[in-house]
Figure (cartoon, rainbow, N blue to C red):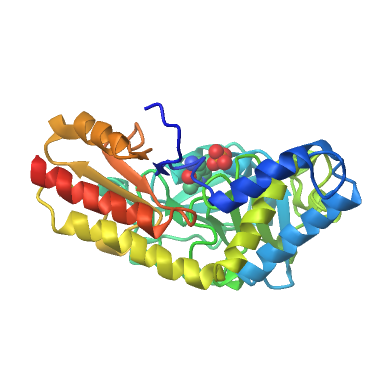
Length: 365
Ligand code: PMP
């Protein structure tokens, strides 16, 4: 350090973005679409930006195969904001007073419970806390209530590196999923969900825009206290522009969606992500130095977490990785250890480089 060139950045978010998108954005920052001004400087109501917004929207719909009875919103306030917006928009649907079920699989669902409990009863229907959040709670342990408006899961717990391997069956109750850290990383059947939501700063673009995909029949039930900017009905009726939207973040998201389409779409990303994560899990499984604690059936393809059995090597691992051009590997402070975040924009070569470094570090240790 300091670096004068781009390195492999394994940070959990904000995270690495496709180089060709960054290069094009650099030019568009100064001069966009022959307007004599940069993309950040033009009105959100201008035809140029409205086209850019419509393209981004359509490309996301195409990439995720979002059915026509869903609305796609580009909001603000992050996934943390939606932790409040979701109960405010949905809890009224519960039969006997505002209530929802939560499947707690780590830090992010714990936060969702805390926020939702300000607006109604946030029932913990299942948790893997006793297993130190090293797995998704087994479906057979879920105690779902027929009086709950929805079931909330976090599809990929970014801190623990714990991911659902498939969409859980929750019957007719709407399933709400936080897909902040695995949106567009694998094929999902959107029709199995009532609401999907994600901050953009991992798999999509810069921080600032929050994607909310919501089934139409779940719109229009907001509590009267709901702030206008988080009332899905109001936003759906106004192209998500009830106030000034995050124009630059939406532009960047749109460029990443185009890049994704060009790169083979979600099907290709899923294959690559499987391959990338497998490379690292193989290192863990064959090692006597590294310890992956996440149960095999809950292993995240986006955030690979591991510990060093000899903790005295922690700083040396990070320093040597950085010297070799790999950063962002320190685990979240609440759990320690290491974490390699390998979102769509992390090339296979970056993961190969890390896997090789890990093997060599162990040999030298
Ligand atoms: N949910 C998950 C799974 C996350 O990883 C994060 C951020 N790391 C959040 C929610 C919070 O997102 P935001 O910072 O966009 O509010």
